[in-house]
Length: 260
Image 1: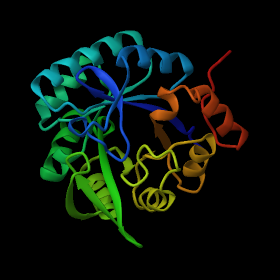
Image 2: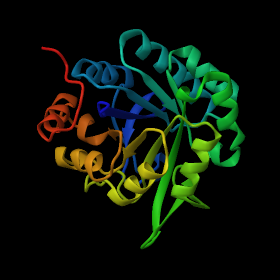
Image 3: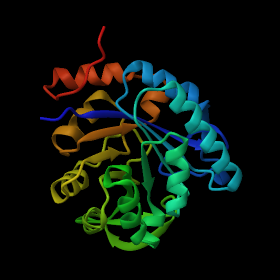
Image 4: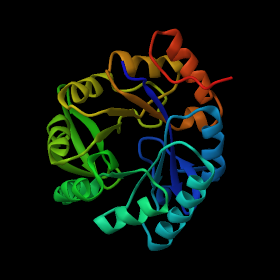
C-alpha cells in the first residue's frame, strides 16, 4: 500500500499566510495573519511534511508577483514537492509557477469555467502536474454541490460527477475541500470524501475540518483519502507534522516517518 501523505496548506494573502473559517474573506474581516509563508514552509519541511500547498487568495497582479517570489524562495530552501493554486487561468500561468519552482498546479474556478484548461495543462506538462481543487457544500442530505470563486458562487455541478469529469480530462489529483467543515476543526466530511475517492482513479486529498489527530486518521481510513491537508492545526502549533504521522502509524496507516 502506498504511504499516505500529510500536507500543510498555506493560504497566502498579500504575501502573508492567513487563516479563515468556512471560506472567510479578507474584505469581511474573516482572515487572521499567521506568519510568513517561506518561514512556515521551512518549518513544515523540517517536520517531515510530504508536500506543501500554497493558495494565492489575493487574486491581483501584485499578489501574483508576490506568489512567484514565495514559490522561488520556498523551492530554494525546501526539499518537498510544492503545489500552487489561486488565480491560475491559463497554460501560461501554469508555466510561470512551474518555472518558479512549483511541482504541481492546482486549478479550481478556472477549471469549471474552462474545462479544456485541464486537458491543455495535462498535455503540456503531464497529468501529474495538474491538480483540480473542488469546493463542495452539502445542499441536501444526499447531494454536494460544487462552488467556485472561493465558495461564493454555486455552479449547479454535483461534486462526484465533476471529479470524474476532471479526471477524464486529465487531472492527476483531486483536492476535495468541504466548505461546511473548513476551519471548524470539527472533522472532515467523510461521506463525500469516500464517494469521490471511490469514483476516481487518481489520488484524493481531503481538506477542511482537521481539528485532531484522530480526524486525520478517520478521513484516511473511513474517507479512503490518499492524503490529508490541514492548516490551522499546524499553523497554531497544536500538532506538528511528526505528531500526525506518528499517530497515523500507530493506527496502522502507512506513512513516511522522518529518520532520526
